[in-house]
Structures are given as C-alpha cells and as structure tokens.
Length: 131
Ligand code: AMP
Ligand code: ZN
Image 1 (cartoon, rainbow, N blue to C red):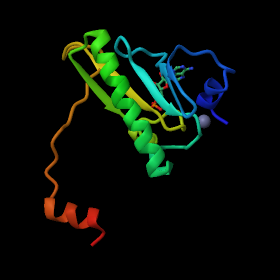
Image 2: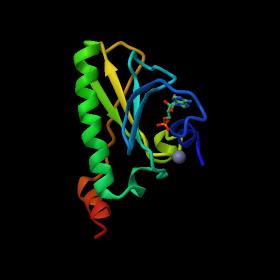
Image 3: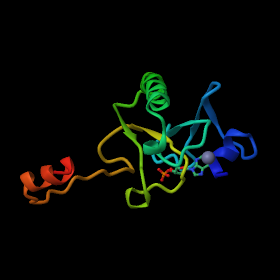
Image 4: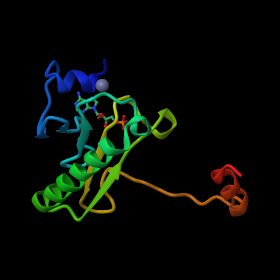
C-alpha cells in the first residue's frame, strides 16, 4: 500500500528501535540528527487526522516513552516531536508517522524558524472557530 507498509511487512529492510503488535519505531534513513527516529502505527492511516483518537493516544504514549529512552541514551539536550500532515506541511510519506528528532545544539542540521506575521487576531479566531 505504501513504503512504510512495506517496511512493516518486512519487504523493505529497516533499523528497528521498537516493535509491538500495533506500533513500529525505526531509524529515519535521513538521520537529520543522530538518532532521528520515526514511530508509526502498523495499521495504515494516511495522516494523523485520519487516525481514530484512541489509537492516536496509544501511539503518542509510546512516542513519549521512546523519546525519554532516546534522551537518556543519546545524551541529547533537546527533542523535537514532529508530525507533518499534508504536502504543504512537508509530508512525503502518506502513512502517519511521528518524527522524534534529538537535538544536540542550536546549530545542528535542523532549523525550525517561526517568522512573525501581522494577522488580525480577532479575525483569525473567528475563522478558526468557524464563526
Ligand atoms: P515526512 O516528510 O514527514 O513524510 O517524513 C518521511 C520520512 O521518512 C523522511 O524523513 C524520510 O527520510 C523517511 N524515510 C523515507 N524512506 C525511508 C526508509 N526506507 N527507511 C527509513 N526512513 C525513511
Ligand atoms: Zn502504509
């Protein structure tokens, strides 16, 4: 069905960090930082919005456990948890997965920058609330 389904089924090799009946965690092939990992459900959902809430909660609970394990063992000083959802957000594999990205210093090979925009906050709220 997709490249991650192929990994889950063992058709494509991967470096497994964790596996149970429902969840697989592997090393991201790009290793953006040392230890960059991906946590995914074995059941295919295109993205996190498509995933039932209970299964998502279970997935995130394991993400927290693994993040703690990674932090302890890699001696990283920070961690980014990232879920890209949709092409405009940088999602390239349409099988929900959570990035765990250990950070060692602010000048490593990942740069997440929030630039400011002067949107009218009341108008933004109205839009988001569907008012
Ligand atoms: P995203 O852009 O959020 O969809 O992330 C997809 C991630 O999957 C990227 O960081 C890729 O480096 C990673 N990736 C793609 N193919 C593989 C693979 N065969 N094994 C491990 N990671 C992969
Ligand atoms: Zn899949």
